[in-house]
Amino acid sequence: MSATETELMLRGYGLTTAEFFYRMPDYTHVLNSFIWQDYDIAPDHPRLFKFIEFWQREIEGPLHSVRFTHRKELSPGRWRNVVGELKLH
Image 1 (tube, rainbow, N blue to C red):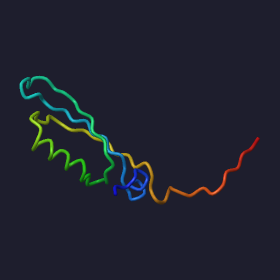
Image 2: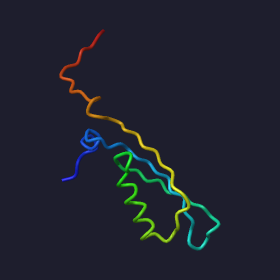
Image 3: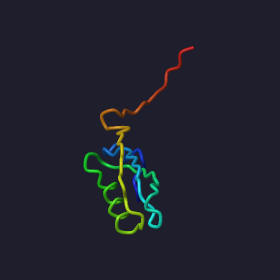
């Protein structure tokens, strides 16, 4: 069973967004872009590098460059269980 997004975030995963710039095989002068997102662990980014290896092995369009950002949305120290709710007015 795969983990939910919340479970991944509590284990230290953050949302990684990468933009791949690549050239078309028949039109090498044209740059295209592809956006990829997944939950990954910084600073090693194993899922991102696994996808880059897949691209280089399976996709015909050669990579020009990759830029990415990583945001850790939630961590175990920032999460707390709220038992009640108090309404004013």
